[in-house]
Length: 164
Image: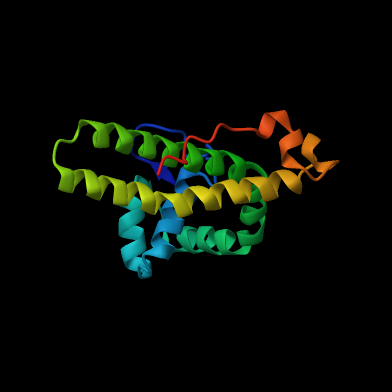
């Protein structure tokens, strides 16, 4: 019997998430990443609420592998901007929280450790901003005509990172 039976409550298994996969397909990708045997994969899938036959699992797995390039295009087209902004926001938030902790900390040694952690964030932040510049420069946005990102008012972001 190759039918699919969603046992757990919650999201619709056909709902596509930000990576272009359904929840069921994400579970199949997880079995691939964990390098599970066929039997282990079916047990995992059932535990995730997707009871299926070996044949159905094999078809899903082959389809996912065949659609790899399509998934990359989907991520590049829709997911990149959201994920990129989320990473920038997360790192900025972490840095702000670290500065708060630094100001509250009484121990000179612990303050030094916090400063070291803040310093170690800087390469990540720089990389994110450089990538953002490149994406905007190569996009169809207002900054493309001049090649100067500073002319694109929507791309400007206050830099509060230069605190060290």
